[in-house]
Length: 271
Image 1 (cartoon, rainbow, N blue to C red):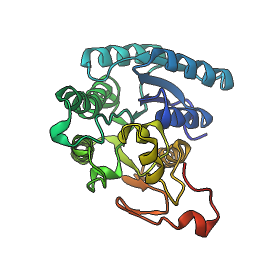
Image 2: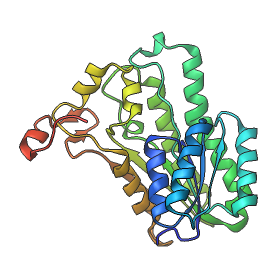
Image 3: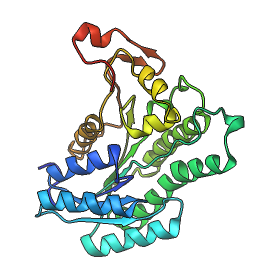
Image 4: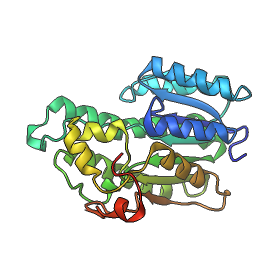
């Protein structure tokens, strides 16, 4: 199995893509350290995974990624319990305030997105590197960003989120260079349109806008992204899939959609 006896830490693991990746990693024999804010959801997922894969070690810590001290403590405890962290998957992210344009956002939303999407990713990476990967000069870091980190999103209310994802891309590229001389790989996975609560949040839970966004094609599901993550992470040490864009085939670019895809290919329309 791809992750036999390896310890895999996943942020944003309480739902959506993070939860789906956790299940796929478990299917491939990896032990899990799950981080998110919701203790109840983490506890339920941990119990479910452990019930199906009793041979694995599955633990969780409820933390706010804006709080470095909490992250450091959680990672220190996890290493004491399971041992070194072999793989870090930075998946957690927030998009708040859409469809409001930047001047209409609450300052608190701007701060929360910046703190979670940028600081949270850097804080977690910093703690894992120093506590586990750098002493061994080994490990893999996978940052789940977005195609919006490279192209401007086609709808309003994304200025901060877009800037956050662009910052994650720049951080990933710089970190990969800085870790030359080690066996630490740094990878980036960029999802396109995925049918999750996250996309619903990005259009302000406006169901009509949500449906129209996916009109004429079937969006990806969290499992599609999870399979892609496993593919990247299961490559041999001498192979790095440095960056992978995973989008619905109908999404020709970030703002060009083939709205006749479902009709042409006999798919059900919409998520």
